[in-house]
Image (cartoon, rainbow, N blue to C red; front, side, top):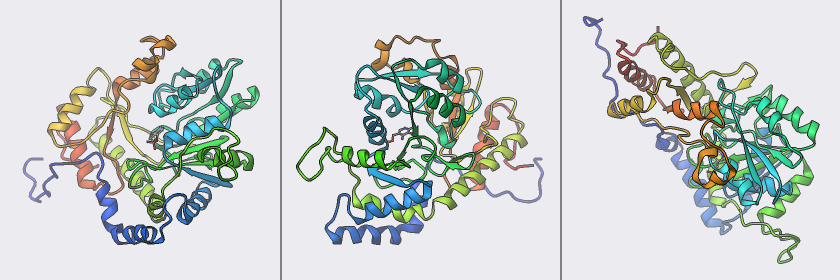
Length: 392
Ligand SMILES: *Cc1c(COP(=O)(O)O)cnc(C)c1O
């Protein structure tokens, strides 16, 4: 291998976890003129661009209604409010997720009930959901973690049997599908986030609720605007959670590119798989896979590094100039703020094992094959493998 005559291009030295500028630069003029139109119009909050985005996202997800709000976290809060969740209610959630999934329930005085995950997909275990249902369970929030839908069919069946609502946390999963149905169109309400690191990211915060129910759509609309209808008359206490027109204008432009970006993420995931197999690293760590009945949109490419090696690998990658992140290092059931709920270490073994093993690698659409080769070469080096960064 050392005496190849052909000269290989040098491997790039720095591979960022995410580089939002690479998506922005080619669209810069288009985005800035859309934003300029908003600035010139004088309509800055819930203006025509927001209505346009609501229609575009509803069509994209295959639902009748989409209601914009200020963030994915607010979307979760509003979805629970629309279902009347409050004190004394239980909300079944994964512990292996971003904080907002559980804090929405907590803020309404309800109790998050944390359940374990399926180790393959790291999404909610349907059997664990079924076992957690109690008379006071009001909703289940499956999270489509890392861009792959949770196993929705048995979860929906459990919910229907017990007459409880299902709210999808689709913050990481816009465009993902489960048996042909889009994330956000499967449960009663879907919650999307436009935080800049998501697959459809704005220039700040933003969120969206999706639903097929006209009645829920009307409630969500009321609740995001202080429960006010008509103007200055309040039927109930809502919150202020509106989307800026500037965000909506940018998101309308970017939504046109989302399918192409998703295909690039999927191609990157396939290339990683080939590279990891070519480097014979599949025995050392586990490579994420797409379940057969799902369309994975790869918000994250998250490997699992067993045997306590994860943190050392992460440090090694940092030394090699490769960005990575741990989503999420401490499960929610072990967070200080939820200590009063009585969970202990060992309460949710699969969740705790995942938190100790996961490592997310760069997967953004514009990542180059050379950069992916550099990432896998750096991982191979950590395990003392010779690998020249080429797929077989
Ligand atoms: C990002 C995210 C949220 C919250 O979205 P924000 O727009 O940041 O408030 C909720 N749940 C999950 C799983 C997320 O990844």
